[in-house]
Image (cartoon, rainbow, N blue to C red; front, top):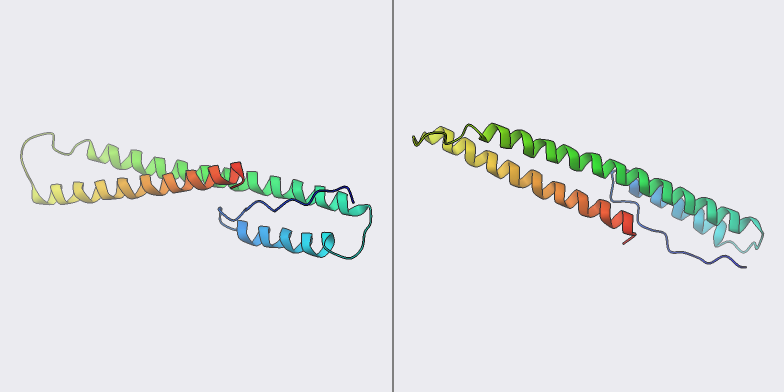
Length: 126
């Protein structure tokens, strides 16, 4: 057989990706690992590879949309903080609220970073 077996690239970084990756893996095992040696194996292998590529790209798009949502959160919270400390008065409630907003910004930034790393790992196939 002339076809080279490729290790399936992980698709599970985006929601729902694990189910699709498992289904592709199952089909690959059933068809490509069967004892039958027919010309259709190369076509099936290529179709599965194309499906994996399509699914990977779809997951990357989902992850990028999620990262944009985290960016939107950061921008909104930053805008809300723009009124903080315009003067030198210290209001305990305002300071506490601002403190919580900074924590929310940090959490959204960290989540956005994680999401982008997931998207990059899907793109590079790691």
